[in-house]
Image 1 (cartoon, rainbow, N blue to C red):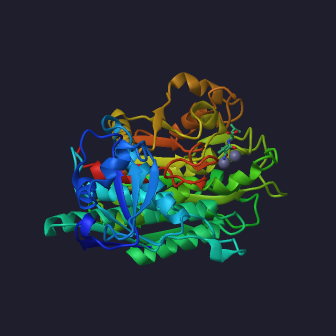
Image 2: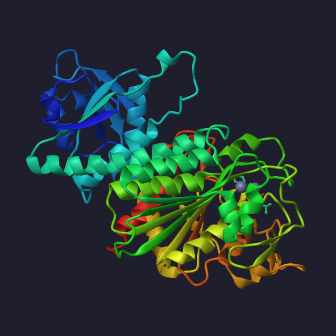
Image 3: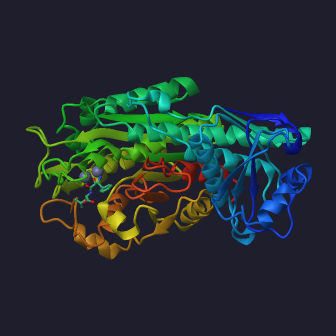
Length: 498
Ligand code: BES
Ligand code: ZN
Ligand code: ZN
């Protein structure tokens, strides 16, 4: 889809469809909404008086102009109560308008943008593009029947007036597109089934990103990982015929910039291994690489946005399957850190592959480590599929994440990392076990990880809930969401400001 800017006024602009937004029953009409109303001889005032359009949040009403305006149609979309407005609602309304336009079969629309209150045109444009693009995402790659029925918007024209405005719109579109395209890439990888999206494919994707953006890349095969001492990662990978890959992508290497390590869980399919999962809903476990997908996507966007960091993306990727070579409950593994782990459940594989990845990240002496992982079912029980479980050993870093979350709408909720929880992980035969009790499962998973980050400021994002969703949200369709990407990008974009 092409998003472009044009100089022009809404009420004078000829197009297939003109999109306008309004708050709920505003005291007076403002901006382009009022301009169109006046040109339209007060038609919008009339229909609001008649109750044909109230401006309720996400309300969409289409009107045909019959030659009374240069635009052939006008779509009015509601923003809800003015005092409750924020960018999250704006992204939702942009998406709802886009879905309405697409589902109605229209291919093109124009939309005037104007700043209001404290919201600049640039940030409104960026959020409009993000809400729109993320909301109309579809995963149709494997559908072969009735492909001609797939509807898509082909062109969006954003209208500005002055040269200064056009510059702001252009920047907003650019940023919004970069971020959305990265989220699309992650969603495609997450929605892609595990027979297509193997560790080899993820490594190939990382190679492609490295090549396109001049990043450094290293991909360790299992034999290399074994020689390096990554006993935990290797144990998980050995259960599958599909070769595991330990992927390291580096952006802005050797430029003397602050280093941030991004670590993502990349289990392309989690059957549970010998501690096999029940078959009901096991298909969902193709999303167990959502953390790795988020890291890839974040690196790609960070590079396009030229964020001033040395970013190291570390993605241990493998399947978790039962086989004659699979690791087993009771096995004792030697991790890269030198610490030993007694395997209680082979289904707690995420923390094992991450333990080696976290240890590996310490080589880069990062200022901060951020890991993203679909780590525990317990986190889904605790927080549902709306909220990311947030854990941190560093208050300032935690604050940064919470602030970024407030901006992107990817909700986070902190859970504790108190020492007492470590009791559950004590082992008779090794340094610790990979599973504690069922109670406090998300916390115990995080406590396990904390043993591998030493004193480095670290956040663990347990995205098991929001990584893929059953019920769509305003700008997040069913399926893989790409959660965490916008959050980490926002954190990086605001890093110097805070
Ligand atoms: N990938 C799962 C976690 C998961 C569960 C993600 C449901 C999304 C939805 C993880 O590897 C796992 O199986 N964790 C176990 C840990 C347990 C054995 C301590 C779990 O949560 O049951
Ligand atoms: Zn598992
Ligand atoms: Zn898993």
